[in-house]
Picture 1 (tube, helix red, strand yellow):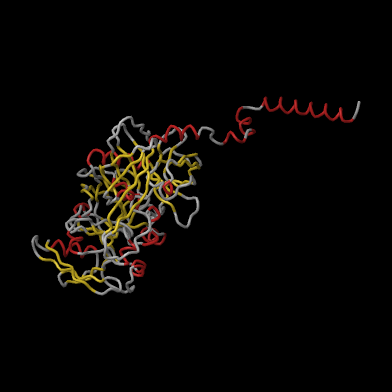
Picture 2: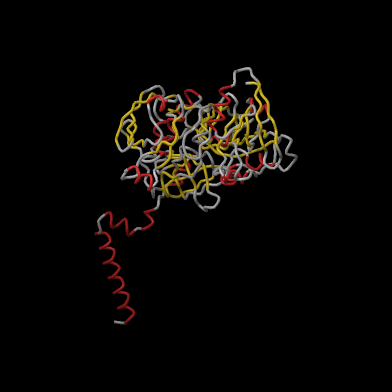
Length: 478
């Protein structure tokens, strides 16, 4: 027998033995032997079924003329650090005193046969025109049903028939490492499908008081904003929202568990109602926890109690440490804000706190949190709804970004509501408020108090400073 024939016979025997042993493996071991089975094979089917529900959103908005500061920091006092800025096009370089049209692109998805579409607030905020383009290339004008800037969610509606809505899933049970699919219009390229895994959950990126993002490596780019993040069952588990400029391949989505109730409130009422406690809070540092004898560093330290608000009326004091709300442990200041915001307005809440080393329980009747209420928490802003102005303390970082000296006194204007008294009076984002009727302003609370003291119908004069552009006196009638 030739050596070649002996080699072929031996190889055949070994191959037969290998096949027999592989067939004898238990199912789990056999799956491991087949590495490609670890990857989903039906992504194309998920994409095919979901695409009719995913829409392209194009908006046109009029940007009022303003200073260089306004153009650079439109929509945020934090300039280039705004996590949403990449979803908008470049600003006009024309005469800053003239109005100009700004066009933006985004995505959304249909949630019911009536034509309701979920997207991001920053996609459609202040838009003069909203056009929705379906996967079949039909276009419709959309109307805004409601917006929630706090979570960057919005609900719009089109009048169309034969729609294919997507089903909302459960993001609470979404595991890290799970495969997900993102569909949207990155850079205006409609119906783009990307896939990846859930990289992390509960991410905080500094975009607002209710940060709780799903992080994914499924490619999300400008224009994907508002589109769905879909699990392997074809259900929406997140709303694609933000990217990090410095992070390649990192995207963030709002969990559908957070969005579900907000979407329902927007559909029913056109707005979101949140519980309001009326306190300033911060996390417990290791030193503060040790000082107050809190072993696990869980809880939120009360830094300020707003006069005549629910916490004040219930007897909560500065330096109290809130540890539970209605039996739910409070792990951080952010967790406290989210818990209270989700409670019914007008209902009593049981709050457990630590004061002077002793546990105490108080009962608070929650009020409605609205745009004309000072918002509590780290880095928060306040607003006066009558005036239509949002303001914030002047930190050294914000002072430098707006061209002010770091030792300046006053508060910074972070937002001017379109059509409000503030806009008519000439307020602009980036104005530094120094005085109200010749009285110095040293805090957002002090500003609100001074405005509140002025009788309806009286004249109000506000002294502001505009970066290196000098001083201005803005007048309006309360």
